[in-house]
Length: 119
Image 1 (spheres, one colour):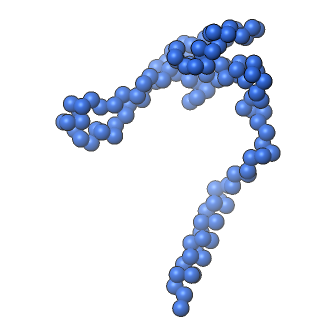
Image 2 (spheres, one colour):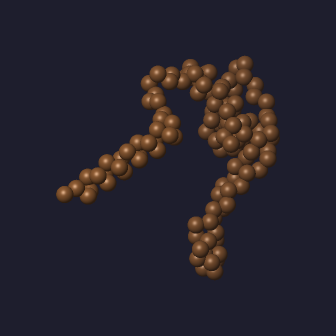
Image 3 (tube, one colour):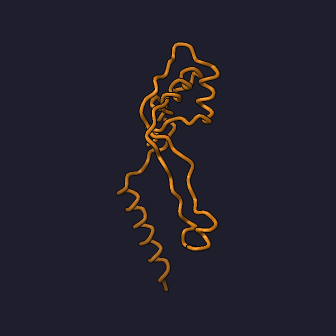
């Protein structure tokens, strides 16, 4: 979803881009999703329907504008940061697969069951 999100006019990265007008990087507006502010129930709705207090309506509108990933790519190159695709994975921990997690949990349950019922 993030790759299709349009930068709102008040987005700090868009304001930075427009203020600096980075040379050699003219971003072309594209079609994407513009996220509106979340809508919550009014006080009258809450009075009439107490279960509506947890309701939140998120609105996305199809809109033409500069995508956030486009802005991020320009900012990363200007600031000299490695792009998200070029991150160093040598320092990251290996993420265990789903089967390994289930086996570890099952072993923990078996061990705790053995220790609880001891004489």
